[in-house]
Image (tube, rainbow, N blue to C red; front, side, top):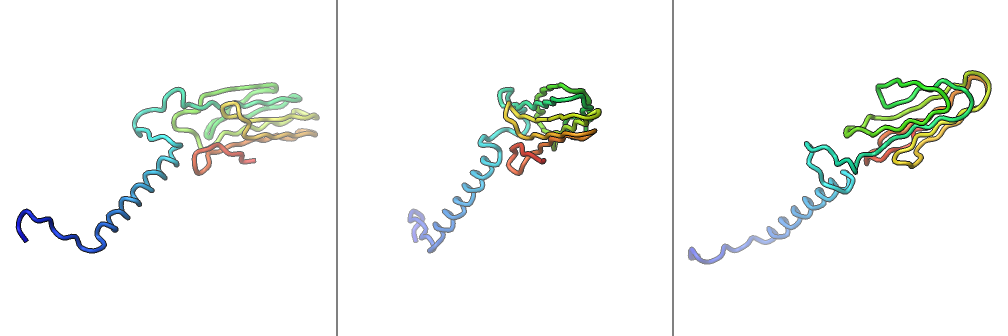
Length: 145
C-alpha cells in the first residue's frame, strides 16, 4: 500500500457508523418532542408569548375558598375568578377547594390558557368542591380529580 492509496474499509464498519448516527438522530428527535417541540437554551427564560396563564373560578352559594399552586395557601370567597401567569419553572400542581358555609351548591374550575382542565361541584350542607391539576409526563396540564 502506497501513502496515497485509500485504506481499505473493514466489512460492516460503515453500517455500524450509520446505525450509531441513526440512534443519535432518534435521541435528538425525542428530546425535541419531550421539550414541547422546540429546542431552548436551558439558561434563557421562555419568551413572554410562550408563558401560560392559570385561572381559578369559583361560583355558587357562600363558601370559603382555598386555592393556589403547590406550597401556597391563598384564600377567597364566592364568587371569585383569579388569573396568574404560570412561572417559568411551574409548580407541581394547582388546586382549589370551596367549602360551603352552610346549605347550598358550589362549583370550581381551573383553566390553563382559557381551556378548562379540571371541574368540581358540591351540593348539600358544608360540602366541599375540589379541583386540581398537575403536569403530566410530557409537560401538559392534566386533571387530578
